[in-house]
Structures are given as structure tokens and as C-alpha cells.
Image 1 (tube, rainbow, N blue to C red):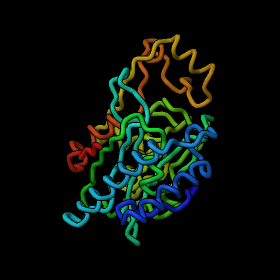
Image 2 (cartoon, rainbow, N blue to C red):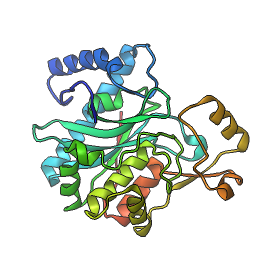
Image 3 (cartoon, rainbow, N blue to C red):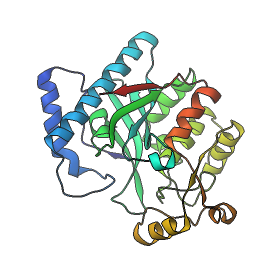
Length: 275
């Protein structure tokens, strides 16, 4: 697992917050992200990202003090997906580290290629990713699933047990040729919930059994053809032909996960954070 430059808890003093801004700006190009361009974020972008990180840290810390919550599924809105009926683009598992600050384990595409890595980041870096909307949403698992996830997330080997490097932004939920970020998060949830799981196929079987239903996006053939030709991180060859030919692309979205978890696995009601 790739570990990004350490980021301190943003819910600190103004001086510590200023240092955090400088640290994240300096380390932006030091880790694998989604775009990997050389452009530096604007001061306004950094300030808004850090404000959202601070708000999130305060909300999570308050819930920890009230209920003992130390693991949540955290989502951000990095892209405008409204044309597909989606609000949130990306999820990761946030956990309260033994030292105190909240950290996020999530999967990131490497510079628009067909490869991805797992990252362990602070909240500041998680939100410093050219967000479409400066909002976040989170939901917490019930015990003892929370304990199982908390232990798994701190172990690089176990957190990466079902990670598959071949990346496809629209990978088929029930396939194993590729794996996108939200798909890794969901399959890793299955790994934590059921100790007997050892493969992605087994994780997906567990998710089916628990009633998870992926989103079905309507994507026309010409759009798919253009994406296939111009973007290395998008492919459709893992989707069943019967669905693909009717423009139905079944994939794991943040929205579908957030809708499913509270009803099927008794996660807490999603809590939204807005600036």
C-alpha cells in the first residue's frame, strides 16, 4: 500500500491548520492521484478543501465521543455525475487511528492509466482532489463489524488482500477482470464481515447474498466507443453483451453503496457535511 505524506488532524489550532495547508500543497505532486498534472491547486481550492476536512474531522470526532464510532464509509463528490443520476463519486474507509487523527484508506487510479494503488491518507489529502462539490457524506457500521473493519484497515496486507491493480472506472460489479475504487471498498467490507472470504468471487457472492444491487447507468454506444478509444482507465469488455448492447452498464457507485448499507447491514443513517 502506498502511504501519502502524513497529514495532521485538521481540527486543530489556527497555526496547525496553516501548517496543514502548506504541507498538503507541497505534497500534492508526491503521490499517485487521478490526474497527475503539474498544475498547483489555487489558494481558494486548498482553503475550501481544508475547511471541508476540518468540518469532517470535527463531525467524526464528535460522533466518536458520543457513540465510540471509529470507522466510517466516507464519500466525496469529485465529479459531476448528475447526468447519470448520481451524487457522490468516490468512497473510502475512514478510521480513527490509535494516535488520534482520522485516516482514510482508499483506492486511486494512477494518472488516468489502467492501473491503481491503495492509499492511506489524512482527511486533508482525501479532499484535496479537485472536488466538484465541497460536500461529504458518511455512514458508520454496527459493532462488531466496526471492530473487524478497524483492525483490517490498519493492516496493509489485509487491506490489500482483495485489491486488483487493473483499473476500470466503470468495471462490471460482478466481474474480476478489473476493479474500480468503490468496488474495492465494497469487496473489502465483505472480507471484514465474513472471515471465510479469500477471493473476490467469494466477496461478490456474499454481496449478492446480502442483497447489494449496483447502479445501472445508461451509456450510449457512441459514448462508450469514444471512451474506449481515448481513455485508458475506461473499458466495457468485462460487461455482459446482453446488457452492453442495450446501453446498460452495471457498476458499483457510491450512491448505490450509501443506499444499501443502512438497510441491509444496519449502518447508521448517512450524515452529510456541507460548507
